Image 1 (tube, rainbow, N blue to C red):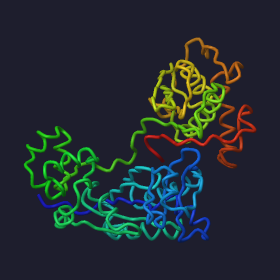
Image 2 (cartoon, rainbow, N blue to C red):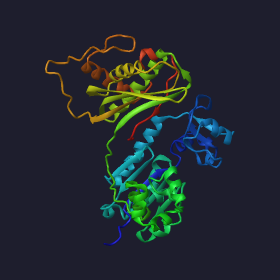
Image 3 (tube, rainbow, N blue to C red):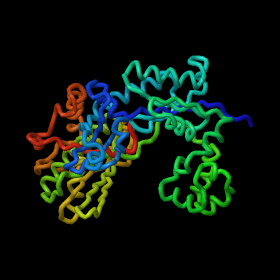
Image 4 (cartoon, helix red, strand yellow):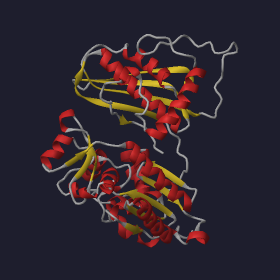
Length: 415
């Protein structure tokens, strides 16, 4: 069987959030720019420019630590509406070249360009065209990897960052993989890497040279997977529409919060945002999960499955509030809500044979809620205003006069 040609692209935007901030404010160019939460509020870094990375700053690092490493750090709050808008522009560029686009997050995706050669040229030409078009239309820089498989394409996009473009041809697989540390294999985390190193496996080449049965015996099913990847074997296909499993939001408070009314208002804000996100993606969910983390880092979750799926904020909040009442009192450092069991809004919801006879639900101040049909009609108008003027254009009365509660989006997948 002849070796596969490189028809898979992995496109990864360089320092995406930080790059958008610099693009929109050119005076920040060359400065150590980061997007994240404040250091005095237990914030973490969401994205770091390459100027900041030279100081050792990286994403997921506590902001306080980042400031110690780089005292001149320019810290900016996240603006996910702008980031999502840029992401949609980039994904639209991808789909101009191929329908086989698999988004992994806001700033990266796999593309399968096989069969597109007559229109746009081979995969290398397409990769270079996409890179140029992203820069010309958005002002942002992407790194592109081109290879015969998803694993190799993602690896290639990371090899020459930033502003990288790397092609791995079938006859180059061994020369590229062999010298790389074994941690570069997808699925080899810190623990697995340490176990491999204890066996004398330091590089991907070392892993490839070991007998497959020995690796499987040591690591089970994952051993077969990582041994295949060490040989460049990855049969996964580019899946254009990944199934989204859940959508949620959570927040770590600046100080631990004991007041239950304060926690309920935080949940109300999150439930409205999560519901808006679900509607924007054309989804409903029927399982609501509350996550609560105490000051000593003990974490509890409580879950309830609804009789019918929903994407309405009041419905989600009623359930989340009920779940909050079931957890023991105590100071919380984090709270979050997640909706799972998602389905397409085009799937009909089974109505009661006697009409809309839902049990009466209560709002945040004990007021009765309108029926689902009335809520859907009102929500449709509110969504139009939010999409035109921003998500803060319409705010619940109970949240007026309060600082907006910014949460971290906990989606399993992104548009």
